[in-house]
Length: 107
Length: 121
Image (cartoon, rainbow over the protein chains, first blue to last red):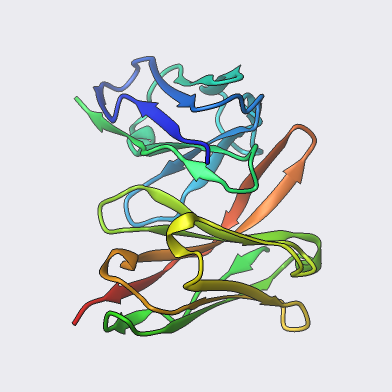
């Protein structure tokens, strides 16, 4: 099975900061990589699919990049509503897997 | 409007069984793969199982193989998860999620609100 490893596990930042979260796959997944945001007590919402494609309605401050085994999610200028937990997910295999999550907290 | 509404969660003893349901509306159910994803209290997301639109292909995470069965009733637009031989580590919020296939990608575009399963004596 494909293992997904995110870093960091948690991150403190301020409104207006630029932040980057990384995700590494245990094998080549080409661009079958998705990013989700989850707020406390809520279901996850997809932000980016296929490594760099925007889901409809997602603010343009979110962007994704990468291919193969290494991927990044960047938030260009943090807004108060962005403080949440972020997960990567590979959809290359029929056995899906998520990263362990990155909790983004207010500094 | 797409809606997924899970039900069937609750408190069950170790070794017991539970059946989760997820009726779907607002889209053509038979066009989509469907999934179950769970989240233990304070932990991350774990994909559990997926099922093809016609129900003829199913996939599971290793930790539930042989104990959980995903199924669907396309006449009722509903997804199910039969959970047997439950263990404490199965305690989690269980979400159903629609699988969206696009050129170059595949992801979960709609999720239910989740139903809590607690396995405890």
